[in-house]
Length: 582
Image (tube, rainbow, N blue to C red; front, side, top):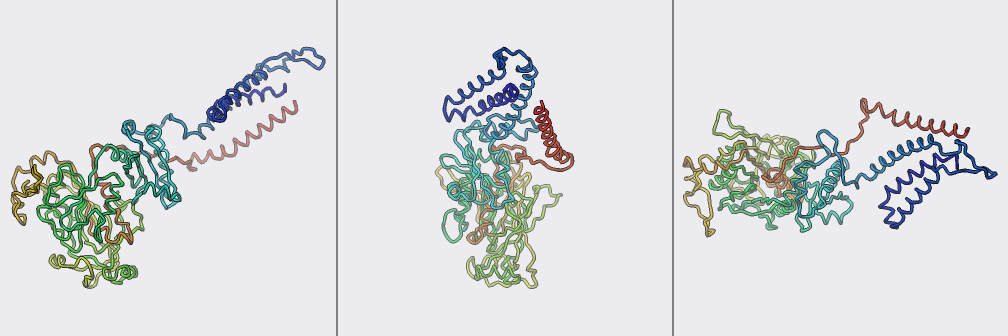
């Protein structure tokens, strides 16, 4: 025993530290267990290092320094104990990092901590929020793992936030959370309110989702009155699934009659597909709505002229005079599509743009089906025209395996909306050609869209709720009379930008076969919707940093993985041999 006092003292000091680190766990076994172990370790340590008098075999006192716990040995014990404590604390920190309530971000840009805006939002939470990450079916997409630290920071900042990463095999949990569309995270409150995060998961998106769920009211208006799809489960085609996705993302869905003016606080409108051209009154209503910074999703019916020529010209959108139909077997895939619906075979929409946040969630090989489509191109207004707003357009997707049929406006409006069309494609068409069928147009200084539109052309409600169209002539003759000063009051409220998404096909026509395009409207709404209360937070990289074996870092791998362990083993063996020989 005398020979191994150094080793025993080091072991007892480490045992003391382990008892302290595991105090909570030991207390759960027996409340007095950690106290007893701590006392036993202290008594044992004192008995080892204390200079108790020793006796030889004949009972005489021995005072040789070599047989006592000398100061040199105590110093070595202290040094090795400190090193052992540092190692144990480091290992315990790594193994229990999820349980620490306090972290320190030493990075220069504070990339491992939440911004002040997010912290303020979380501290003001009144309701409990559960954040569920929905994993991708593609194993290469590991956004749940990459966003784990971000979700953990939210939970550590506010006791009102809990986070979970679901498994695709846990069908019961998925049925309870009910993710829709391309959602990557679902936020749920105790009272059943929901919101979803799509696309890349960032701090800004997650904080805005919490704000939208708890503090703001977001309304999406669907125009009705000209044969547009209802938002309920009515008829063969409807926006019921679209409305459900929007409600699951904390939007309020409201149907709005085209005979009434849009509310002054309206920010998001979905129009179409209509069964007839929109009147000048509706056109002017939408122009004024965009002029004050509104966001519009315009869904065109390829078998009807949409009307609104002034609005289309202001947006720089030129509609092709053709209607795109199935190519009638001109390609192998076109022949397969004809088997889905022989009376009205669909066409393919795809080639989703990677530059737009609206279509970037779709995969490179994703496709959708459409019951015909209307091709369109963007023509920017002349730079010399001071009255034209500044526009920027992005082609969102294209139609493929289609055959163009040129029609006049009158011929188009006479086409049957159901059944066999019996149309002949243009001679010599290229079955492999693609046609742009959706545009995203960003408008800078949209106030110019309202120039020349008198307020009297818009429907309004009086105090009794009665609709009034005073001053609006039939056919829109009054709309052509410009009244300077009529838009002065509106100009003061104009915002700096507006945006329009134009779809040249019905996105829900074949949603039962391939529901890809059903998500176009919800994703567009998520992109277009703008709110004053939402925060803007610079992107940070919360993904776990991996060691990269390249250049200088790779040179140290051999040192730490081979040289140092080998030297440590040799040193230990040398010490062992020397102590044995002593």
